[in-house]
Length: 214
Image (cartoon, rainbow, N blue to C red; front, side, top):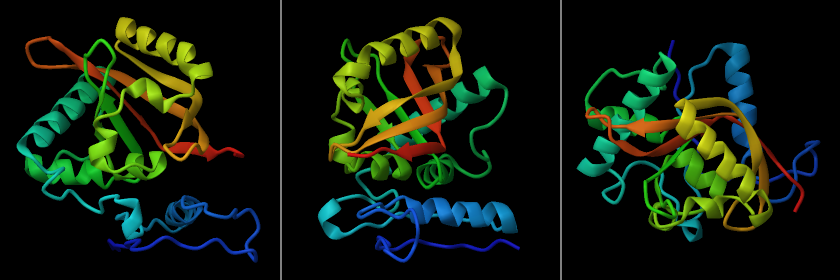
């Protein structure tokens, strides 16, 4: 039986629960997903944060556009072509697939082909992790998602991905807009290629991350 759970507000940290730290907005989600793994419950997570955060819950008019839907198809088609499997279920319309990817309980991001590549997609999990609204996220050079000390490592990763098509074993440290650092693990990074073979950028997805001490 499909059960749907929605997170409509930040869950406050509790001093009674071991391992929860002040302001940790991601532990509750991880706990729910762990419970889902044990019980076989299918969770559909919708993110909603305090009004001051400016983060979106679902694909509103600023996010759900024909350009975004087309870009999601590029992400999904490139992933399937390179890895031989689907990132999400491809049933339904392009709009339904775009909504499904946006609300997926794992991070998906991508950037374009500029000389200093700009982020052009982040799903709800990505916006929450980097603590940015869609408008700011999609105007940010992707190099700024890593601290300066880690940018050479990131550049090597992207070069390796460009050469081999995809990398499925990446781990590294990234930084949110607030300065919060986190380590990502087992990330998949892949090239985006349109049907005519033109290089359109790169994308990444991961579901494992650890928040680091400030």
